[in-house]
Length: 210
Image (cartoon, rainbow, N blue to C red):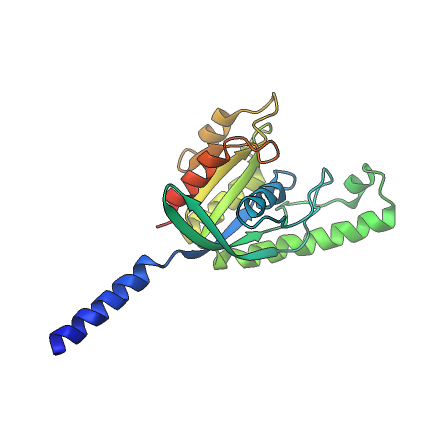
């Protein structure tokens, strides 16, 4: 009888560990890298709906957005997770930069204030992440202070990272430059907007989940 109970408990725990595939995945990176576009693509593929609004104006996302219970399937495997889309990380947010997009001074100042709060909120959420997707615009030199700071904080926390080199549909895209900047991490090149290499992205994400 005791042996049977022990076997039952062992099987129960074994089953629980095998099914532990519900993780929290965060999208981090500088403004306009395409985090929300990727979030929308993921949600569209697996939920049939978008997650948030994306635009060419920096800091369109100024609050952390969460989409829960996304079920992703790839190569016969299944992953359930919460997706966290965060505001773009920046060391300086100048309201005058928003006025270049024909925004009034009042509206620009409000956007700058909200964007600053968004950066703080995004950093606070970092400790809650099981996995982080660092989303970078592959047409821009990735080796700058913001990206180094993000990567450094993730390394210090020992959070698994997948670097997503987005916007590969553009002529100036250079995935190799991203790989050379952060050789310690897997880099996958995609175009979320044009739906290019998304299967490679999903495969890489599954491999990252332990």
